[in-house]
Length: 446
Image (cartoon, rainbow, N blue to C red):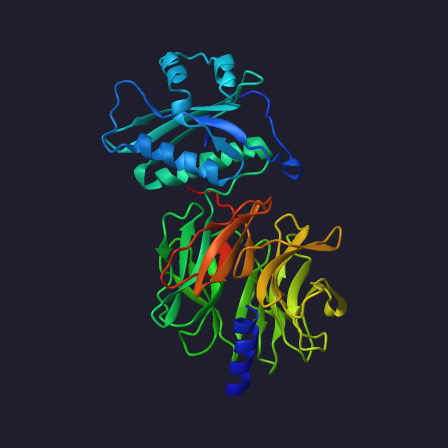
């Protein structure tokens, strides 16, 4: 029995690797028609309101965070202050905007900010305003009041509002990415902001940990832990408060969790039947079996509507793992659809938030690359072309980015790449490497 479980683990896990201000009409760009030319935006230095002081330099710090957020969105070209310092000086203390002057230096969107720092409660009050030079309109304004503790989060939130104004979809600056990293001989879960800041170690299991997955509300992260000498299904608070719960500890494998839409179901892999099968754990802890096959089934991922599950299986009879899709109501008894072809090894499916694509890992030559299967056209294209092996994709909640593990020159780290091209950005720099990234959903609370 022990040998059987060990072999299943190796195969399934290791081998398958605010307050709104009045504004004019919105000006948006459909994501499907995203221009390759970025919007030129001037993020002017934050202006401290009269009779207030800022000894900690919070305004300057916030300005840098906002500029960086908009740059990382890959939608904006932030114009340097040196290009408009004279124009900015001429408008100082005025409520009017010289639309013609800003337009002449190439600025398309103008962002002006005023803030106050209260020395008594150390609160930070900030008001943002965005103007469009071509139409000479005030587009949007937001006012926030927060404390220094939540300053970064508020700036991230407004950056996401700016992206929303442009694309019709909220940005992802406020989101976080969880991933595994080695600590000694073990692995623990770490969480980091989209911009690579605010890195925190979330778990203290002091053992092997596998495949973290976020709950739909972002409050919990579920994963597999060997802390009790069995691969159990465990979840922990994403806030960092060490509230830890064991959800399932059946004999054998309790692994590869994928939290379903709505938060009431978790798809996972169990080996209690002497084989690796896909199950759904219901809210009342009942189990619904999805697959009944003598070959190994693993790596489930939900469609956004909760009606289908994509998974990995070597049921093709060639010892070659491929990606399949099944209906949740019927399981694989209702038939499965194979979507991966052209490679002898495919794994780690991840369904896009819009439901139109499935990303997965595929062997290309001697290395692994991430492929994108379009459910509408039924065509597959290669997403990653970077050196090394690229595996374990996970989507951003707006569907514009994919985070994944890169193995290159003996190093394993987490990278982020836009769906619309460009170079990937390294997110993790941990000495213990980076594995199994999982992107948080949107959250509402600061």
